[in-house]
Image (cartoon, rainbow, N blue to C red; front, side, top):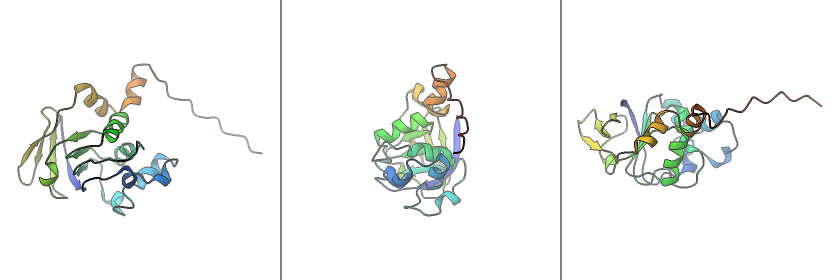
Length: 174
């Protein structure tokens, strides 16, 4: 499988509070994704397009285990690639179905706005402007499949291990 998208570049140590502001933890998923990077890059959500790629330096997603990966996925980000990913953030990517790859040195190989081509067959990432090729750390097939299929919850539902909750009945007025 191949993913091609425009690159949005972020620096080292981007924490989950910059991705998903803490005051929105109990807001709707739509409110959360609309606020993605609002403190760090106001208006970014209006520029990003479905299929774009987030590329970052070291320790992307540091901080808490808030569902920042879900906000990026809901925004339409096809893939997150970083020199290194925080472990909690990677776990969130698996849970919420956001493809995430670690590729040491990748942040030096792209400028914002360039296009990347990501092969999930051999984990190679090509800068379509310069032709430079990088090799990401391979993911175990089960984790890759879980990310590609929408995350942990859809997988558990498909296997009959989890059922979708019934919509709540409307409350009667007082």
